[in-house]
Amino acid sequence: MTSPTPRYLVPFHPKQISHCFTDVLVIGSGIAGLRAAIAVDPSLSVMVVTKDEIVESNSNYAQGGIAGVMDPADRFEDHVQDTLVAGGGLCEQSVVDRVVRDAPRRIEELLAWGCRFDEHSGSLVLGREGGHGRHRIVHALGDETGKEVMRTMIEWTRRLRNVQIREQTFTLDLLTFDGSCRGALVADQQGTKTLVWAKQTVLCTGGTGRIYRESTNPRVATGDGHALAYRAGAELRDMEFTQFHPTVLYIAGSSRSLITEAIRGEGARLVDRRGYRFMPDYDDRAELAPRDVVSQAIVRQMEKTQYPNVYLDLSHLDPVFVRKRFPGIDATCRKFGLDITRDRIPVRPGAHYMIGGVTVDADGRTTLPGLWAAGEVSSSGLHGANRLASNSLLEGLVLGAGAGVAASLAASKIDDDYRAMPLANPVEEPPVESLDLDDIRNSLQSLMWRFAGVQRSGEQLAEAAAAIDLWRRYVLPRQFDDPTGWELQNMLTVGRMMVAAALAREESRGVHSRMDFPRADDAHWKRRLAFRRSSGGDMEMRVEP
Image 1 (spheres, one colour):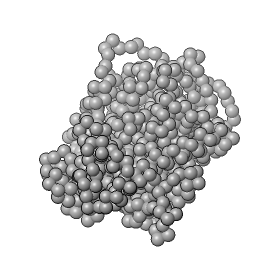
Image 2: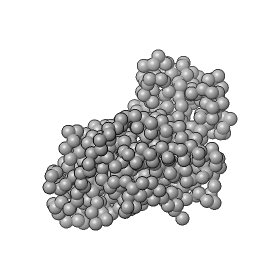
Image 3: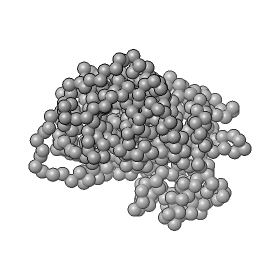
Image 4: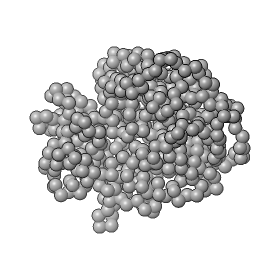
C-alpha cells in the first residue's frame, strides 16, 4: 500500500547500551496502565514507563465520569443495549456484557481505595449523558472525574512495592525476537537509551487526538503505542473510527478545552449564532443524542449559518446548581470573561477518542505473542463504530485489570532469564538536508482536520493519502535523536492508516461519516478493516470476513 518503513526508529546495539529486566512491563500511566500494574501478582516485578509525568494522560482530563449500573432501578441489559445502539452494529456483545457487568465492582473498588465520587445524603450522585437511557454516570469534583480517579490510582500504585515507575521516559519501539515481544527500547529525558527486557508487555499508551488540529487531548496523545505496535508486527483495526466530541470550547488563542457531555445531560441547549435551538431538527433525542449524531449536526448547522461555531446555553438553569456541578468549566470560561450561567459558551467538535487500535481478544491478548493491550490504544470490540459516553474510563478499569491479570499469569510461567537477545539496529547515514519538523506536524494536523475529520469524502481522503505518503517518504527513513522527531514519525504512520481505512470504508457508520456514501451499508460493511506491517515493511490492509 505504501513504501516500506524501517522496523526501528533509532540505532542501538546491545553491547553499547544499558539493560534492565522486569517480569511485566506496562507502557502508559493512564487508567488502563495503572489498573494493569495493580492487577499483577505482587510476587512479580512491574515497571511502568510513561513519556511524561505520571498524571499526564487522557484519563486525567476526563470530565464526565464512569458509566455503571449503580441504581437498583437500572439494569445491566439497559446499559448493554445503550452501548450496542451507539456502536452502530460493530460492537462485540460478549465484550460489552462483560464490561457492563463488571462496572459496579470496579467502581466500588475505587471507593475502597479512597476515590471521592460526588454524593448526596450518603448516596452516589448519578448523572446522565448522551446515548444513555438512565442516570448511571458516577462523577467526582463535579466535572473533574478523571483527576480524582487518577489521584486515587496513582497513590494506590505508589504503595505497591513490586511496581517501579519511570516518568519522562519515551518508548521508542517494542523489542521482538523469534516472533514474540520481549520488552521495549526506551529513552529518558537526556536521550539515554535502555533496553527493557520483559517476560510480558502491556501496552496502554492512550489515543491519537493530537494528530488533528482541533482536539481535546493533551499533547502526549500522538499515537505512539499504535505506531510501535504496528512496527513490531501486531495487527490494528477500526482505524477509521475517531470519535469527535461535539462540544469543545472554541475561543481564539485558547487551548481547546473539553466541555463535558454531562452539561447537556443536565439540560444545556445547543443553539446557533441566531439563538436557534437546532438539535431537535436532527434527532428526536435532541442534545442527548449520541456524540456522532450531535457532532455531525453541529457541523451541518455551522455550514448552514456560515459560522465557525455554535453555542451551549445554560441561562435557563439554576445558576447556583450550574456553578456547583461544573466548577472546572466555570473556572475555565471565567478566564475569558464568560459567565456560564448567563453567557453562551462557543463550542465546536474536536478529536476526542480513538476507537481503533491494536486488535485484542477478551483478555487483552494481541496478535503478537508476549504483548497485551488495554484502553484507548486497543480495539477491544466494546465501542464498535462509536463510543457511548463515559464507557472509556470504565473500559480502562475493567479491561486494564483483565490484561494485567492475564499478563501476570503468562509471566509467572516463564523462568527468569537475564540475557539480552541478539538484537541490533544499524546507524544510517545522516541526511544533509535538515527538516522543519514543526511545520510538517502542523501541516499534518491541519490536513487531518480538513480531510479526515467529522465529514469526509473519497476525493479529500485520496488527497490526504497522497500528501501523507510524500511526507512519509522523506521523514520515516531518518533517525532522529529526540521525541519531536519520534512523535512526528508515529503520527505519520498512524495518520496514514486512519486515512486508508476511512477511504476504504465506503459507507457512513457511527463516527465515520462519508458525504459521498451517506448511509450505512450492512451488506458490504458490517465488518472490520485490519492493518499489519508486512515482513518487507509494507502497510497491508485486509477486510475481515
